[in-house]
Figure 1: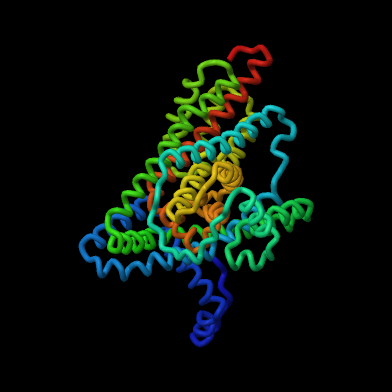
Figure 2: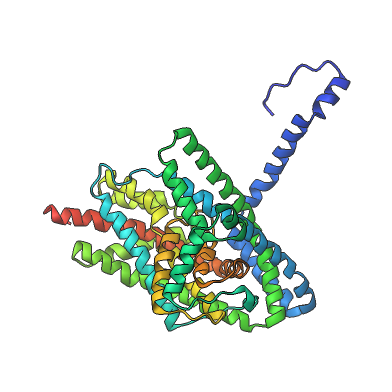
Length: 439
């Protein structure tokens, strides 16, 4: 529509033109996008909720039929298993290759970045403590032959080194996320000095992979419908008791971080009552992010908060967008809790030293989490690899994450986004205090 068509002499010529592969392909792609866009823009939360309810209903009323629709869940988990390695490799490589010096020219940004990183690591450590206090087991289908139980921190570290030096092609094919991450970081670091056109190609590749992941995740309602129905028909309601306990540990840990840990970090910065700023950012930024479920979409809200408080624009114009990518406390909690739940479910012993090492890995994974819905879940297999959990089992854990994601993902985004504004405020007020200005 709106394009100039070539001059066509008659009916025969017109028929030949409109039947040509180029024209048919253009019209076909247009119809595909017209069909796909409403599907991609619809509320994923509502769709998952519908799939969850229908799966529960089918599993309770028609158990035999429910077992057969479990194939839908298998397809979904297999699709996740296929796209996750490519997502991690391309996304991390592109992110590092196109990374700018975020602190250049503004000394106030550095303390904010430090707060982001420390906060993400502390969130993972607190999540480890919560998982040990309230260990949760979930229903997983696996074989003991598929597991390689580590004996301690040295064995974990040894396995980590061996996985890191694996062939990258084999790593992507087998889902060796440690090697994928190492190769992605190395390639990204080298390509930072490449031609700008090369870095633009990497950006386009990252966007393309994210689009494919969005399409796969859009089929989560069907996959969850199959998983829930077959699980309920096979194991009964006992499996869902574990899901509720898992959700309670996740959300409880996020509330503790938002109302205790983050205010304490802010107090260390400004040396006065942190709760006015804490509650204000939770109310204005956290509530908005809870419903949008996107830190990136909530950037304008955080910018407006900083503007209203008369913070330096040169600072918050950098720190807020960076925080939407780097400050991932909720993602660190999700990765840690779900990984430990998988280890507990498979009777894998977890030492304190191994759990602390997991906190480092979870914090690093969280900072590289994709911006797509459920992006933090896609990095769980990397953390599971520390405990010798195979990729098939790890993807079942990812699927469990999507089941509880109706609540978990909203709370995770609310914590992440509100902390972006809170830490920016804290660093700016600290600078004012050190300069002798009124706070």
